[in-house]
Length: 208
Image (tube, rainbow, N blue to C red):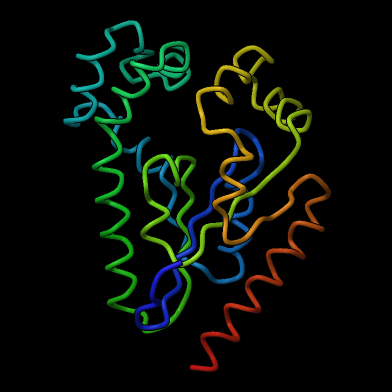
């Protein structure tokens, strides 16, 4: 947890594969938070003709292309089978993702003296971004539920397990969390948890 500047709270939301971290981030967004997604930034960086498009293509080859664009599933199939390649991909993209996030936070602070910014970051702890947030939130679900949800995302069990094993264990993230949200149950139940956290943040803001 870090010092709050101008009463703008920065929440870092993370979890494991298919635990529902992005869904939770969107719930905060509906309540009024500014949501910044690391995945969306990375996706934008991979668009054709950009400098990162060329770097990734040079590093991982033409086989990751589909209709002239980088196919993220093909790229994921390569890197999640080889930890060195995964680290290489992260070393190319992560510094720029972090810079874009910082710019979005700064832009928000220029127009808002108080509020909440949510950073939706799968690798919050791995990339050391937890040091830049006021509260680190970990969204959890059982391994069984993760695999069930992954299948709905068109990931077979083996590929899902590859991705889970390539990440920090969920238990390690939970030990570092300031707040844990259990997303094992219904959407309504999770929304209730999110609203409680939101209300506490609003009390902190309003009491300053």
